[in-house]
Amino acid sequence: MPWPAALLPLAADVPDAPASVKEAQESVTEAASFIEQNWATWLSIGLRILLIVVIAAVIRSAVRKALTKLITRMNTSAEAVEGTALGGLLVNAERRRQRSEAIGSVLRSVASFLILGTAALMVLAALKIDLAPLLASAGVAGVAIGFGARNLVTDFLSGVFMIMEDQYGVGDKIDAGVASGEVIEVGLRVTKLRGDNGEIWYVRNGEIKRIGNLSQGWATAGVDVQVKPSENLSRIREVVKEVAEAMAKESPWDERLWGPVEVLGLDEVLLASMTVKVSAKTMPGQQFAVERELRWRIKEAFDAAGIRIIGGLPAADEDEEAAADPSASVAAPSALANPTSPQSLATAPIPPPAGPRITK
Image 1: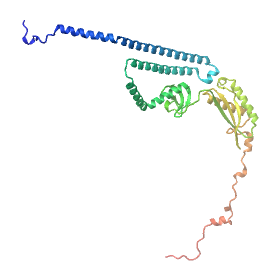
Image 2 (image 1 turned 60 degrees about the horizontal axis):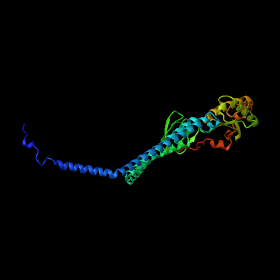
Image 3 (image 1 turned 180 degrees about the vertical axis):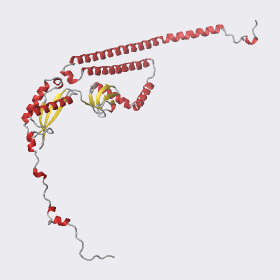
Image 4 (image 1 turned 45 degrees about the vertical axis):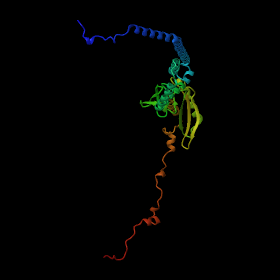
């Protein structure tokens, strides 16, 4: 079948075979020459990048292993003091483990970021990329992010230092100023507290200006006993010591009392009463229970010993002394009882006039 004339290729459109082959040979020659001239540079750059990556990976692995080993050693020391008096005085072993794990996680993340970031910059420098615009852009972006998220950065840094300094932990009862309660979760940005009424407080770490930890170390139980001024102070001291010795030998008070119950002396002396101060060092968080038990036992011991406490039932002799005076019900004499006194005359009504009345 013959082709139409419009579809037949023109002579000018047919490529020159020898010219095309020559151009291809020249292109291949130029490419080979370019590769021959630059292969050494490329190999050097590649080896440099590979060396940077390998060294960064080795340093990162070594640092992470060292941090993990340090955390494991801290946990081992925490287990060694667990259950001893030193462990109870300083900090709970479980809290120490949680704190060490949190610190280790933060340190590992920071180390990885610094090492990998430095390696990335070195790789870009090896590729002959100008880092000045990149660093300038990163600086501007960092300033903008710092202004926009300064509260977030403040919360994060405050949380890191709180964890590293072990200011408080899960299970501690703290007073953070803006809220108080038991710590149920410690984060790098927010601390979660449960209040006395069961409410949950979310406190940003950057807003905490002061912290009062009521669970670390030891606590003090203080009891004020008000008695009559006529009571014998030596007898009061003996009774309180007997109560303290008996309480220190019974469970669970033998574990909650970390020191002897001491009679500090007279805290206040008044005409109708005097206050005896009693104090004891207790397990943290158990001071209120110890105070209630001490009040209970001291009240029973004082009743048995006949020592009168202010606010209690009066004794029999006190009823006789406090009997009502018969003359107290008699009113004081009044000047109005005498009709001739100036006070009585002043209260008498004015008599009407004696003469005739003039009316209009």
